[in-house]
Length: 202
Image (cartoon, rainbow, N blue to C red):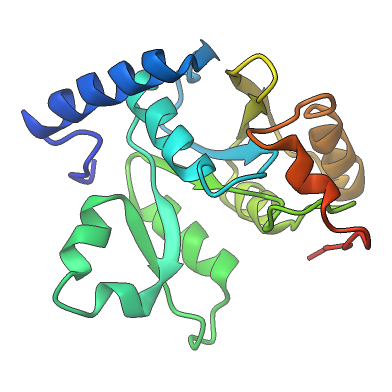
């Protein structure tokens, strides 16, 4: 397992204690638990606020799992590159002949444990269809998708529902998005600010 901010001895327990204290003080809770699997993709939605990043850090610390995220390779080639690696970053080179999906599948196959976090909407505004990158990575790597549903009204994140991709991508995507029905996110009004809805596919 990669040494990250989530599993570094001494440092991680301290950060977890601080994170848990902040979560309690603002009234957010986590309902559920991570599956007993070494590899999967976590999708979190709805994405309605820039505070979502801090919320998901709190969730990860609370659940005691070590997650990864994708970031452009340029972030890892400067003097602070080590920091992005330590925070769980996986560099993505958009100039390579192999695409983003192939690069992620390669990393997943190479490592013993791999939990990748992705925001499937790709924007804080309302979209009819989510980007499918997370789905194609899961399908190609042969790993499941785990859902993190943000209920901003009740201040709770429902974590752990697991979905295994089938051979019907359209039906799978519909089922996954439907599983998030009724979730409001941290700032539900953000989804209503953009009158013209965007449709995002592959």
